[in-house]
Length: 225
Image 1 (cartoon, one colour):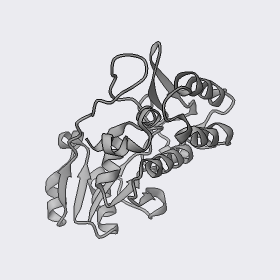
Image 2: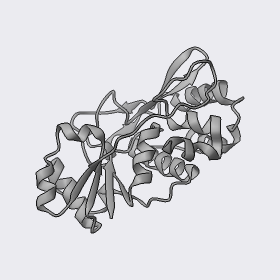
Image 3: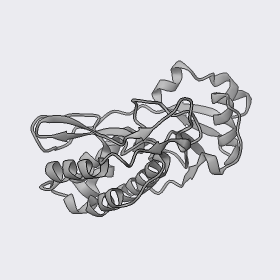
């Protein structure tokens, strides 16, 4: 049983969904500290004028947890992002595949960034055809604040024997702790595919919606290489 854990992000990149697809259980870690100016409230799309950030404005006060951070709905972020998506993807080959998803994103009232991210991650995984069960960490009970002990506890909660970490985990994880608890650690090694995009030369590390708009139901096959 492979368990993997990651903070809920906004419209994540391809590697995020590769991690979900490789796991038997995926947990959205919504009860750790929010990281400003990272991926929890923004991501990038490709446009005729280069890369563009889609940012959800938040009212963050250090050291709030992700699931405590409210969206600043006084800002007209939904209108701006709707226009950006329509302007840059309306003529994409698979526009209709995500049209309904974005209508929900831009017409619903979201209070917390975690609420929005959990929705978008779950829906995008489903659209891709990924069937991995997704759980919310804050709904599983209390765990240690120590990062390694928390991940070990979550893995054991699901009777997992293997923890799938991101490649960056090598720099900070104490893998010996996992071994002591009978848990094998494996690291994701994601090689980004090249695929056909709009607007000229290929740009990697976009939100997965760029792949879906361009390749539709072939996206998971491309994502997995």
